Amino acid sequence: MTTPARPDGTAWEVPATGAARFSWDYDDGRERLLALYQKGKDKQWDAVTRIDWEQEVDPYDPLGVPDANLPVYGSRYWDRMSAADRRALRHHYASWQFSQFLHGEQGALVCAARIVESVPDLDAKFYSATQAMDEARHVEIYSRFLREKIGMIYPVNPSLQALLDDTLRDSRWDMPYLGMQVLIEGLALAAFGLLRDVTDKPLPRQILAYVMQDEARHVAFGRMALRDHYRQLTDAERREREEFVIEGCLLMRDRLRGDEVLTDFGVPAADAVELSERSEYLQMFRRLLFSRIVPCVKDIGLWGERLQQAYVDMGVFEMGDGNLDLLMAQDEEIAEQIDAQRFAREEAARTAEVAETIANG
Image (tube, rainbow, N blue to C red; front, side, top):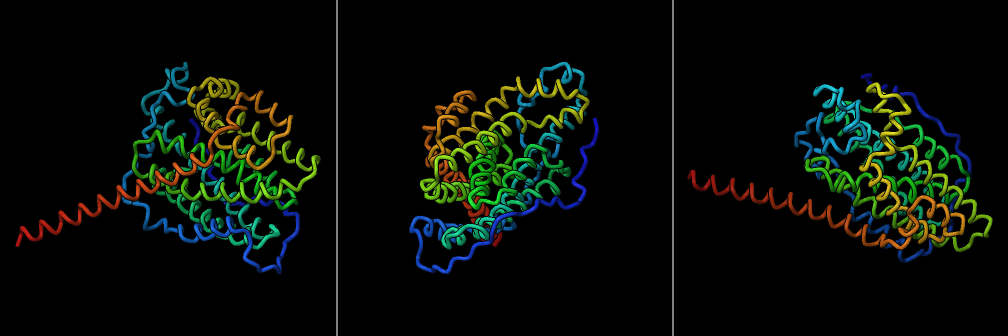
């Protein structure tokens, strides 16, 4: 087993292109988008106080996910591992997963700032400013969880970095929306939701649920803005964006697997790819990934023949009819339930404390 290279502190610079746009039109703007902006303001929260950071986390089993979900489980490599190696493998996988969450959230922070700068409409600038604050909070949360609870950070996955690079290099103002709000946020929501629903560990479940509550608003924002804009595109312009979506989906489906974790444990790269391809857990993740992305792509008006055929070839075409609004509503509801449970526990503890004080006279 080798230790993953830590991020070395050097900056990654992506040459920025495109224009910073000012709007001198201070009329009220679009009612739906302004309502989402108001919701974004109302729903701001403090990661220091809302999350119970005192909860213990076992860095060698931070999520409580069954070993059978590991791609290497049941293989000859797994059989040769000692108990200590298996503990270390769980540690590395958790670090890899949450490290990619962290790096993706920093990408979202930069994209949100880019949208504030480049989007032509003032109402969209308003909302994306609240999203930048949300994304900063998410970077804060995942960084703290990795540093204090996991104790290890993996470098950014090259494919995630490539997708961020493609998203940020494009000079067209709508591309940070498309790359981030639709593709990368869709990827994040699928990964967050899968772990939120399978973990029995209170702290990571709390973190994932609260972050997903914010992300539900971000996806709604992207859908509103892009749906309005894409109605005005020419067929050629729409095809260009559909090609970007196809390439991004293939990249996420085929490359974001965590093969680098297995190679750190001595599994040859080709075998790591094969094990990942056979993993039922990763197959389930891919299905969930597209359950978030495909209906969103269809909703914003990118549904040409080539894109539809690409989704047929990937086996996810039918997901275009999924109810994205229902998924987002469930994400918000789960976060509210966790809050309610925590408040109930705190109230019960206070009541017990008062009763004990009275009994002791």
